[in-house]
Image (tube, rainbow, N blue to C red; front, side):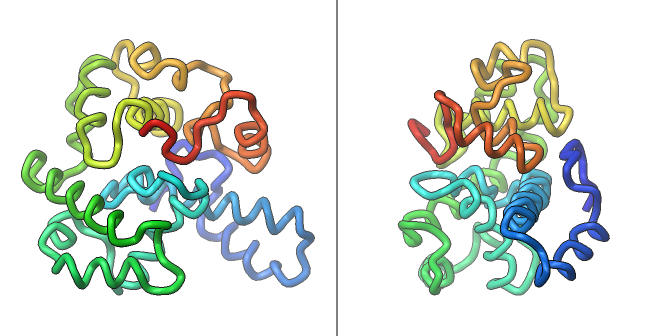
Length: 216
């Protein structure tokens, strides 16, 4: 997987080296490594999008939300695929979500939401989730289909559009205005602004923080 625009992630080699040194690292460096791991997974789930961490990002901490798709991949024993998840037995998927530790505060409901998201991707975009954002020529055209995704809503969609623009180069005309205030340059309001351990601290300590599905 490429590192995209998440500059703090300098590749698998650096992550492997950091994990190898974890036994002698300080609490502060451990916190930085956890942040880098979250960002690494964030880049992965945004590219795959199937069962994106943004869908999980409700009533649980940011880090847990974006780690959940990685853990689901481990439990399934294969990469996440929209078509496979859409046709997965609902009860079996709910049981996987509910394994300790559960993938969400409400694992059964979240399993249904992720499955609904994958079904929409299959039905509307032929299983290619990237088509949600690659066909838009204007910011409003980008925001509308994202907001229609199961588990998103207006605010979460705005944050996701800001994330696409700020970190993954998806910048159709008017994208910042379409996702106000999260598209504002230099702001620290949401996951769209987290690119390092330091920026994560700024986002969490800011007066207007939107991290875990508030209003989404």
